[in-house]
Length: 153
Picture 1 (cartoon, rainbow, N blue to C red):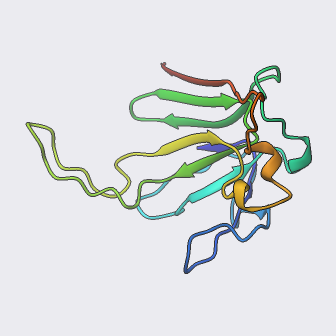
Picture 2 (picture 1 turned 135 degrees about the horizontal axis):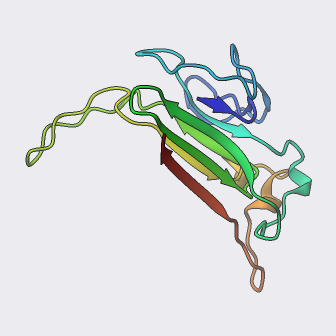
């Protein structure tokens, strides 16, 4: 996995709600590939590409796509990239996956999948300085563009 940024929204350990800070994610470096192991690193955080919330418009569709994350699986030779005009993206390493076998499909456990979700800042509607990127008033337009690209070598 390679992240375009390691600036993220830390969360309160008891509530899992962002604290309002934007800081570097511990032990990761932007644009440096790292391996998702069986247990580490644990990631379920919102990463922030645009640290100036006042510059984030409701409708970002006219802005250029920004690459957020690149994934590569060396055994299958599958690549996957996500880009968006959104200012942030959530990454979840699937630690809580726990599904039973259903209709011929096998059970899946922790780290059997990953989620990548382009977004606005998490909890933006609750923070005055971030509301401008998510609160839609009558007559306003909201929009963003996303690109999910996968290929095999």
